[in-house]
Length: 192
Image 1: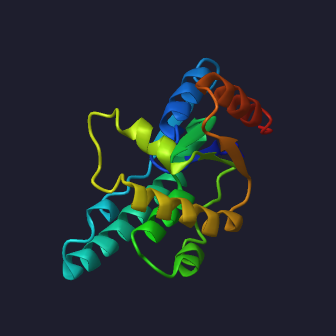
Image 2: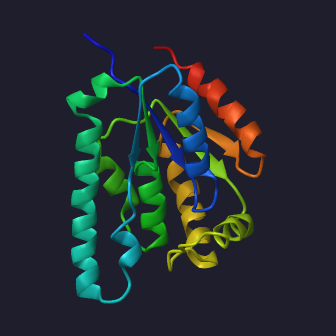
Image 3: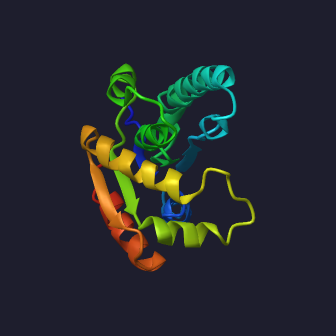
């Protein structure tokens, strides 16, 4: 039987450098491997807060989107790749669910028992002030990219991170090339 692709997740609060590192890793690995990039979107979680009835619908819709995302990651198509690089994964979703006030995170984690843990998860840790500084330069800024939400998301990561295997902490304040070197060394240590 053919091996499945190695799933590598990039996690951390907005502005931590995960998307930048994912792009650099993709560029590096694509030279010699077949790589797929998958992105778990926070929508509609980041639209919540305006109306409690609408929020209930958004929570349900968000759950359906997550289930669809993970079904695609476990489909037969993954046999066609060496690596799947995930811009966010269940850990990220749970951290932001915590930030948005969605409770029962342990229960949600248990309900997603069918979601394969990534072979490797990179958690890019940066102070909230640094993340906000980086975000301020973006042309588009989500309304929830603020000190309170990012602080709560960081707390959510701390709360949930121990329930995931193979999480590698990266100091997101390091220069991009140093982060890339650490990440590539770790990725290449995965056995195919």
